[in-house]
Length: 167
Ligand SMILES: [Zn+2]
Image (cartoon, rainbow, N blue to C red; front, side, top):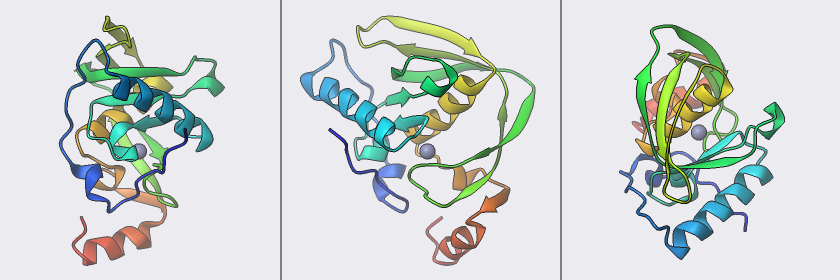
């Protein structure tokens, strides 16, 4: 089932998130399936639970276009970051029409859990690294408008939000 995507300034995007417990409840299983349907329908490369109004530590990564199978990550966290940082243009399904340059570590080590509750640890310095960092920010209530220093699109909208004290 495709879920509506919450857009800024919806407060759920800033709310604290709860850890997922194992074995997964039917609600979390359903949420995972719905988030997969939603990220595909939106043609997004990642989606975090707060973006569909659920304050839980769950993200789905959809890099099928890069040849990876779509996968969910439960309770993900970054355990190590590389020194090297790179600036890449990012957008967000919760911020339609807004794009900007975001500087992040190139390489990260991630610890998370699979649907079966198995701990997974992996390292990446490509798209997975970038998308996981963006989605993990959502879990922590951070949005790209907190990080962008130079907008490539929609900078005027963000300026208006700042004036309205929305960020
Ligand atoms: Zn986003």
